[in-house]
Length: 215
Length: 215
DNA sequence: CATCGCAGTTTCGTATACGATTTTCGATAT
DNA sequence: ATATCGAAAATCGTATACGAAACTGCGATG
Image 1: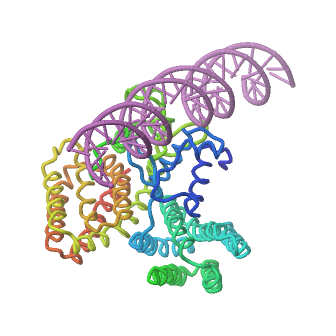
Image 2: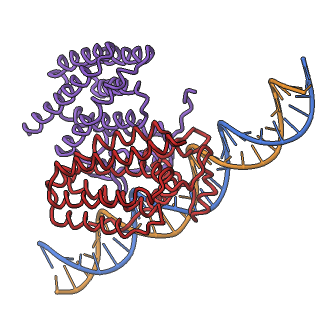
């Protein structure tokens, strides 16, 4: 049942995705396919399949015969991403909380612990575990497309969080909110979870807005 | 500005997508990549890039070393798709209606006319123009991700509509609803447009539910 | 007689190689 | 000096070719 065997392009997809999220890929200049493939120790074809996936994912754009570009960040897009998250994630998590099995609750708890024990200096690690936690809240609903969409939007959000927010200031509040989200989920309290997720996502958006304003 | 130059894999992406939507690709059996590439008169690489995109789009799944499979349809997934549409599309269209320029309104009218004059026998053509109309209602909002998401969900919906609904019965109602949607959009009446879209999308879902029940 | 194992065949996944398009940089003319 | 044209270089996009993994059929063995 488990899909342990993974194709090369799938792994490259994740590697390049994390690089984009972490801001380790140049913006507004084409990705050098040969160079990146050589650096990763692979050929161009699996890299190109990964890039095609990432374009579909919204992280890249491509111009024919000119290559792939990291999609630039903008306040408008940040607003858009968070509006979509607010439209989908709270309701999806609320439903998931009501149908979650014991194994699901254990997985959510585990994701929380992993997020809680992440090295605070490593922004990317925190971001990934934060994403995993949010996805874990939704996955028990067994709605595959919804879960994938939540994950995708979480990935898109991370770029902005990593680029614009210093972790220290919001660390404590985020920790408290995550803890409360966990409790609401474990209590199967869908309504409370939904309300709190709206607040949690909205609070991050407000932080981003403040930071945008300052620049 | 216009992107007239299109890469081969992009065109293949659309061709294969329409085939899947039209049900012209076998379900639950792997896609023969060599055969399909030969049939399309291309090589495997652009086909594989298109297939990778389609997997990201939710129309295909892949197992490593076993190939790509058309994702099977299910009532659960139909419910999920329409729930997502209801969560996103009405609000997005309402916003778009309030900010649309004259050119946008002309584009929506044009999309309506094209849908209205589609050959009623050709289900796929009707489906594509129906999709274009729905996307046209959202596009003026200038929210790229939202527009792409609406289009993606519309594509996923079409499979179910084509596979399960006979066009004749709902033709007249759909026509009337589309006409009213157009009027609300042109009148910049976001609230009415939102309410009507909820009804329109919900009505289609109800039709699907009835059909599922009958089987 | 059923089941397990093994080889042949098919198909997928990736690397290498080549043609096409774009970009860049220098030379020339105004 | 600046702009423009053109050729060289670089990069992308695709086709061909090869190695690896999985499925199918036959045979052997319990």
